[in-house]
Image 1 (tube, rainbow, N blue to C red):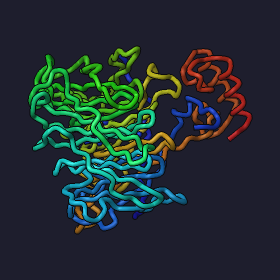
Image 2 (cartoon, rainbow, N blue to C red; image 1 turned 30 degrees about the vertical axis):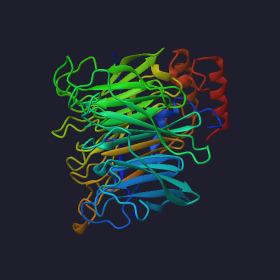
Image 3 (cartoon, rainbow, N blue to C red; image 1 turned 90 degrees about the vertical axis):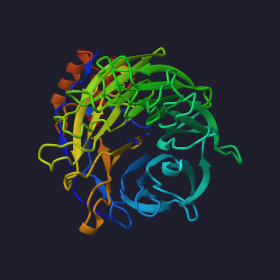
Image 4 (cartoon, helix red, strand yellow; image 1 turned 180 degrees about the vertical axis):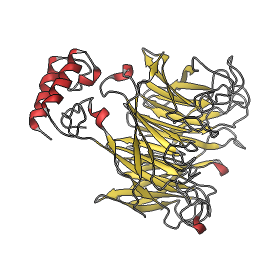
Length: 483
């Protein structure tokens, strides 16, 4: 493991106009204004235990609390590293798979929820489940659909979630080509982990209401509660060939009975947009990328009210588009935070085509009506051309943390393309520092009251999703308590 000193580039707050290769508290109320002051740490770089040529460490990443999975599909069958945070340091806890399990490009996709890891091995069309007990990991089960396989790319996209007592795994098979899913499929598996002897079982075989060959439905998937979203980036619509689509499905509270709720498309769709290349969902907010949108690589925000979805905003790449058209290759959303990967793009002041991640937030407590703003972008200070930083990203909310991969990073001459991953903690300064000056002053009180009287969501200091007198008392209490 190496420890370097990457940097981040602060960006001015930019409000989104209105109209996620990817591969999810107790205490004093946090002020919505904290989001505008948030900073990311200098980052911790992680590398393979045995870096070598073209291993692709960082091709996939997944976070759950203080545990991180990093996929390394190159080499002898591929592997996944399990890192845990202990004593302030990330250390390797295990390497998957366990001995005796045949693999081929194992780790192209990973998902993690608590003590359960799901790893894609889509070259042999298989998804493997591993469980942790204490500090030991063991193989639990292989997930394969009941429908016939064969050239389906089953496992090319995976995601995990939970519903009541059940764990849910969603697996995309974008080249499934047999009726009734000639343009790709998504398979849902569930398990009740508290049931003795329980095993994973298939709980849904999903395809769009308007399937057609070569849509590549299931190339991207994400899940939040009883809703999942799947992208079909090569779906041809009235906007043109390969304009792309994304579909939202909902289920009952045990992860079965899935039905299509809506087919999403942007209001300014064009042929070749590849809308649906990456998707994310959190509650009633969905994110869908269109990396080939002409003139501006774009990521679209959709919101749901009373079961009805509508387009809320479009986020354009913060830097001029490059030939890579990569902004939106990866997206991930949790609550009021969104991260977008642009693995082939360039950032001023850095080597060309290093790649970057862009971090957005909306005011805490503003709900689906909150306006998304770009807070900062991040590029490792040691980044070199064609590292593909941001080709994989993952986000956790407790604690706020981002991890991103650079699967083409050259570590040494003999370890070209060995890959690297970065873990970035998002720190929160003093909550009462309303104007983000780095300290408390009377000006913070004046600025807070100005926002409160203006009805700004940033003044919802008590987190009760509204502007009320309680916000003033909550702010003053935090201000007098100091930092």
